[in-house]
Image (tube, rainbow, N blue to C red):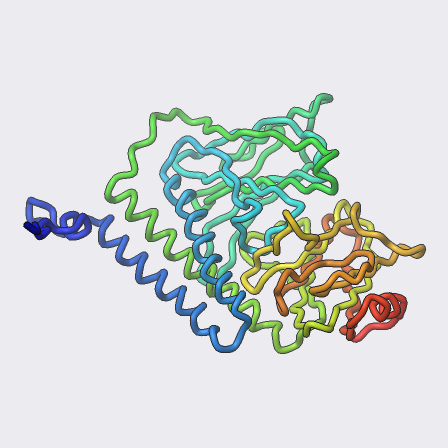
Length: 386
């Protein structure tokens, strides 16, 4: 005998409480999230006939990356117990993540005064940057404190206070619009450098966090949905701004909502056939750190765990005059400073100059590169087609 299921589904049951009142906010917000995901997915789907298939697949992956990371933070919005969580991992990426940087994000919730404390380690650069929420024009306000201005004990210990009113010692201003603090650590050599360690705590009296209830979940989901849509739209707009003039570098100015003011950013939208390469010549300025890496259409760094898709001031090989020639192509022709496009015929090349004396714009030449011998010949040429 076959028994038919007559009970309502969990969503149907949850959307109609037994007391006959309005639907649960969590159910309404969940349905709104699905609509927003469909809208963001539509931005990706609309590209299906005009871009490489890998861009479409990674577009959907980008949406899911942003979704999972943002929900974790949105769910902590009302917490009075902040915690630094990894914002980027080797596989969850967005907003032009740098392979040489660790990004830890702490949501600033119900408190008004916080303390960050820890040890400097020996990373190339350490900073803490407070951001407001993202405005409709995808901008944020920020306040930055880097290791240039932090006082460290002889053993590397430090303490930074975050509050609306200035206090003695190392201090970052926050206000009602402050939403998160991002800790950045830059590395030139991850094997040799010791990462910084730090924690954040609230200084006001506090109690245990409430559970993520119906209204709390709804708030977190709606915040997440808004962010996913904005991030997807912003990634598409960045491409449209530069894809008409490929294979040339431009200064990107403020470089999006979660920039650091200590960096100068230069971006190039590359487009290459299978037998082509991009030769990039640059004499890096005096700076604390510089790096170059490749990213996909959505601003996600390419696979840097198993491929060479990034270089920095320690790993790049300059010539006798200090000029670095970077070779971007899909095939390794045995040239120094080769970056692997990893199956991406088009995408981003991004340079960072950190605490630089000046901003240097690299020179670019697009060449045919059909054999190792031709590649070596091309690598010895000079000139640019910027």
